[in-house]
Image (cartoon, rainbow, N blue to C red; front, side, top):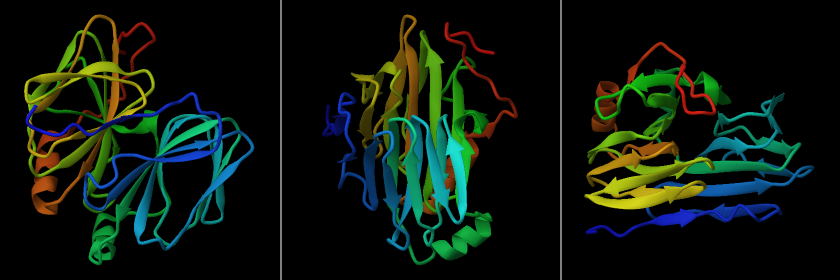
Length: 260
């Protein structure tokens, strides 16, 4: 492979409060963390830090306390407090959270007004907008968990299917990207014709400009998030707007891999 492989696997056997840095220094302005918050504990995400706290509840049940409101979640959700809003997560069961810290730029205030974003911004995973694009089959379910034009220079979504399926290799030099796999994921990532096994609880950097895709065989489950950063906001938005076409549907897979 002509690129350095930045891939980190999270040890999920740890049963204590932990904040684990992931792939720091790989994408400028971004700092992923994995949080383990054991039942009965809490974690505070401070306000006015100079970056967004973009949180994805991967597993567990917790109260999110922000801006004078408490919301309880027992399923996957994306949650982003405002830059000036402190967030406290109180774990009712052992809770797993992926946090993306994303630096705030001076022009972001104007962009947020243009986008009409209100904080805290949160969407249940099952309510995420579903989309199609030219690189995926009709079998695949793709979701926009945080669509473009919500958080400046950022977008987040997921891809789900069962074998056999293929995300056709493609490149996007205007989008810098991590993949992060849900615990049930079991697939191969293709980067410049090399296949890389990727199971659950793993973060992988997709080298900028590389030709990359995903393959899942047999009856295995492909279920991962793509995390996009737009170093060129205008070109990145043009790519996302042209390739992510909402379906207006909310499909799902049953336990045996059947789409409905």
